[in-house]
Length: 139
Figure 1 (cartoon, rainbow, N blue to C red):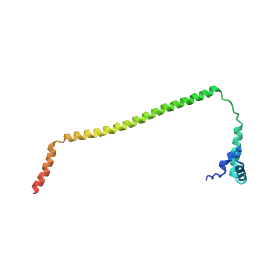
Figure 2: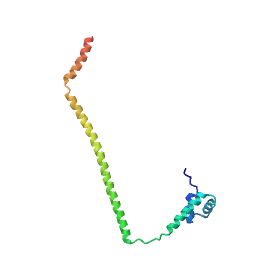
Figure 3: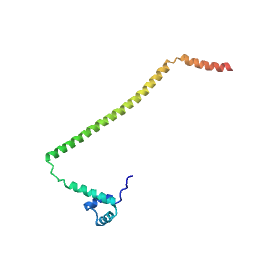
Figure 4: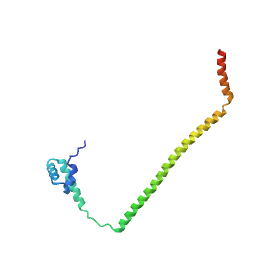
């Protein structure tokens, strides 16, 4: 089961860096005397900070800065191109769906008209005559 973090744990990094006000610093210091979880976390923070302090800051050569900036600009241009292509694909899909929908309506209307045209009037008249004769015979 995972242990809940202490309510002071978010202040430990600022505590180790000396960024807390005097009042907050004293609260965290008093809390550290009683909380083994915060003590352990503070030890980890101190170890990480001491490890990072071993690295020296070096000046980056100007040509490297220029190459990095050029790569960033190129990436931004590719994003713009990709965005245009994505919009073009989305538009093409929407147009295809719309054309398919309209074509389906037109084709179904054409099929209905053709089926209705093939129906002879004699069949319609036969149906009407049969219905009328039924009522006429019943009277």
